[in-house]
Length: 431
Ligand SMILES: [Zn+2]
Image: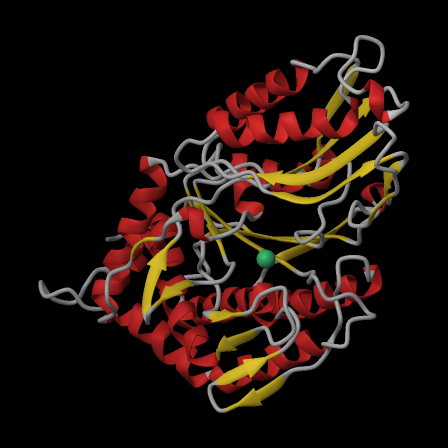
């Protein structure tokens, strides 16, 4: 085993002082290029199979497609059923070897449920559109292409790789402790984690994702005594629910601002009565100008860069809520199924430095850190507190979560080559 590993290290070592890919790395690059059409066809099949998060059967079928790719590479593939959380489940694949463990993270589900009009893959040259094509089926194809290239180059056999593809990234199941149990355990067991969501691109320049902000929804409900408007502000009626919710939201606006923090209010209603549907999207309210409002409801989100910031800001929000106007009550509830932040640690930055060494050797430009304020949360947030994590290793594209979502098919080649070399070097050592 050790001899083989040593031989592989030699294979991975740059051939000359001038940085360039080793022979094994050159094989990986050639394999990815040679299999480009194969992987476009695989992406097309995966995109044309609907896997909206709540289409449990569809998510399982996409999982089967991935299983059919990974088992021939020597992976032990498990399906972790998630009926308990109302979701399809997750694919967990392991390839044991003497190398260090590298965890690859992606997801099988999309935001496009079976009733969406956007269901099919369309290609126009190097650009292709389709539901979930970049988020995250392009990323899943990058993982597969990279592992196949490693297999062809002989670096996979000694590598220690775990793949976790969740089936509910877009709508995390509940309880979240169950929904993310397997991903968190894989993160704790890993030496490095790589997340294959969309590559960050701005003005043609590609960026590394060393941080992502959290995302948590909250619901604020206020109540007050109702009665004739002539009594508003007096001792017995007080201020009513709408003044109370206005006070709280204005307090958030004035008192909370700090770097890397946002909190949006997405919907609001108040009156006598007011209510919100179970999904939390539709509010209804009615009221008269001469009636003090009984109820008000607002829903919003909270995005933070670190767990410390997240906890501290939540406490501040709750303190603002608690300073009630006379004769009113208020309750702020944070959704249990939020995404934790992936803070910009030195370990994550060291992983980006390893990726930039790969970029240099492959003749690609170095990647700067992407501003976490400009991208959303992802499953990498669940592992990042336990293991050095690098994100954004999937396909380049745009319009994620919207009709017209697209990817640059050429980016699949670049990203798969980078990933194959990076995973090999992380697992087996080398520059
Ligand atoms: Zn995604």
